[in-house]
Length: 517
Image 1 (cartoon, rainbow, N blue to C red):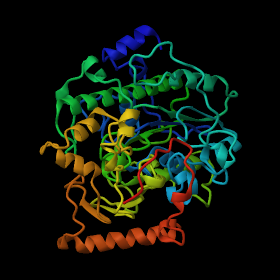
Image 2: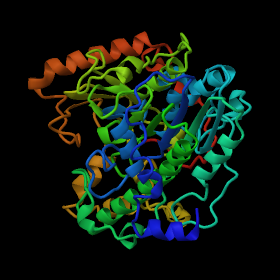
Image 3: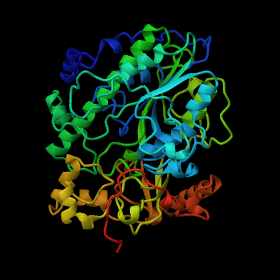
């Protein structure tokens, strides 16, 4: 990216020539492709639904995502398999739930080579594969017996000459994509994973305001206090979403110039929710309900909005079927091709009426490196959550709030399952303020074994109905459905080794905590 281009972006001129050039792409192209499709999988890092302009967020502009949604399908109910990055990515790559992939189902562990991933399967079928930015991780794939990242060979050598703001990575994602395409054989189909490191923290504080965004354009969720600091933090987050989208636009332009865009299956999404309190690492909607747009101009009728519940374990079998391969028997997910090629919108497939998510360990946040295990079932009407260790603190140990060692390390508190952020600091430093205290409790307070939310009426998940007699029948039905599914799919939490996830090594920083009380 040129210096002048960076300055234009900081000034907020995001409707680039890349997206303008795409306005006519794909029009009238509904014929079957003459060759196997390419796949461009674009996954941001820590982005909740609905933070795209296509989904109605007024504080962010995402012309590339919007183009994919407009020429393809925008999904309004898409759910990751975990609210944490490495287990979510493992589920995408394998087409399996996080509880079905052992070590890879928790954070910063390993990823056994015995679990097949779709990039390897496509490479064996003749595809040119690779990734830029963040593939599977964090974790140690070498310990699992792999010779490369599960997302494929890495293309990260091309770097930016300068960065327009401090929080973004120096990787030139679009430049690496061009290098990847230059190395493929003539006529060879490709499968590329674009893994942006944005909008993962840290953000350059105040960058949103510096770029011309307005505090009034920030959409403050009900579980955060509406303060100027929180609004500014959200604007910084929006700005990094736009950075991810800018590189996506450049990749789409590259494909258009190469004559490959019509025959490329483009999927744009994220791995888990935004890195704010009560979002990322939580099994509430803002932790695992994510943006999703899919286009394939030569095959998929566009201009549709689909409300079916989509699980991210369905990506891998979809990619295999789209390229003429059969999904493996080990994949729990099921292909979405019949949904994608349908001309229907709204609720299309009645069987796609539920989604499951799970978490184990996220960061090193508790004594003995213990996690906070959760399983959850999402329907259109309800979100049912099972907390397997309600005696533990969900975000970390508050006993470290006054710990001198913590202060010496520069950490503000012991809530390490929440990324350091101005929004988090407001909750902690003003915890004695009666107006702030409820927000802190929602994010870090202990939770009951069961939670139930009428999700369409309470999307912020603030009113737990699990003990409400009016919803007792729904709670029992959802609990029974969740238990049956977990047993059917072999979840150790309901099997003979319920604590096995606690034994998996962590190949990242492990903090010291006082013994559990």
